[in-house]
Length: 380
Ligand SMILES: Cc1cc2nc3c(=O)[nH]c(=O)nc-3n(C[C@H](O)[C@H](O)[C@H](O)COP(=O)(O)OP(=O)(O)OC[C@H]3O[C@@H](n4cnc5c(N)ncnc54)[C@H](O)[C@@H]3O)c2cc1C
Image (tube, rainbow, N blue to C red; front, side, top):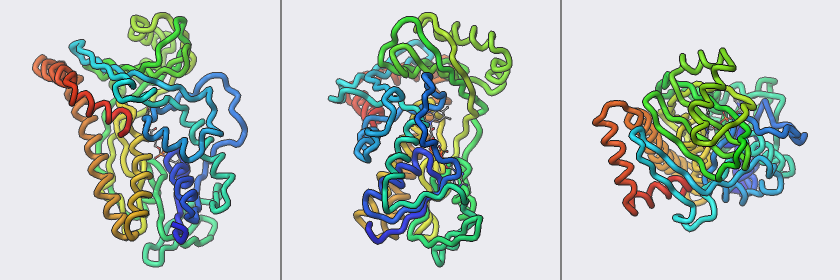
């Protein structure tokens, strides 16, 4: 890795983790990010709305990169239990004990994680952080990138970690397949009156699931997936929104105070190629955006980074990139198909589908099926 020159476009959670992981392996890394996280400590007592459940395997990997020193502990919450309830009321629970772990994963604020990764990056010597210039294009024959202000940068590997509207994918001529779910995801951070358990849960309904992510003993993020027009109408009237949330969630968690809310459009996008010309590679949301109902998006992105590094350590660059694309496309496509099966199957109001899905949860109660699902949840 010492000889490798890696140019990374995009320093979000995936790009910053990739930059840190490559730099720690000795590669010469240049990271381009127009919106770097602040170096100032965030003193807001409330969590931001953009949070991620990071599975235990990825969390251990991130701690191994050294973020533990920098991540704000008030913005990380361990959870040890996960429960899914089908439309017919059949529930399936997983506990960390069943995987021999103390936790299934953590809830972490995206900003806090990105800030912690950047704090490590800023301390490194073989790392160049460019925040005042942008990638304009690149020539894959000479492996040269052209920046907006006229600078040229040579690279061995150009990593597109620049999210769902990736400039790298666009400049490389990589297309996507996918669709809009015609759904929005409403996120609402609330302060609860009764302490809540370290459990994340999700309940399926015909219009889409609703879920809870615990943030502290007395704060939680409530999530409601519904048709785009229904969420947009609710957001126009704060009182209607609050009463809708109370009707849905109060039976589970008692009374609460709404702190903040916002909604996000949901899309499924999968890049037709992850690799171009033996040197351009897509990772994270630049390669795949999936429905967030199972909290897998950034987990798949971290798995991309880990796989790319592992294959580069084993093979020549050209073989490694073929292996990377083969492995990660298969795994990411599998997860996307699973999300579609849940999205279109478990929410179905057709009684036959209801029977099938509650039967599938019962089947999942079988020890080996449950063990397999548990492995997916903890990221093994
Ligand atoms: C409502 C919701 C809830 C979610 N919950 C979870 C969850 O619980 N667990 C989970 O695993 N995932 C979750 N996800 C998915 C997760 O947020 C994404 O998968 C993750 O943010 C992708 O990270 P990324 O670094 O690949 O891309 P991004 O977060 O999009 O970061 C891209 C970076 O590239 C930069 N950039 C953009 N364009 C350029 C350019 N032209 N040049 C240079 N830089 C550029 C941006 O500034 C940004 O910093 C959720 C998503 C949504 C919408």
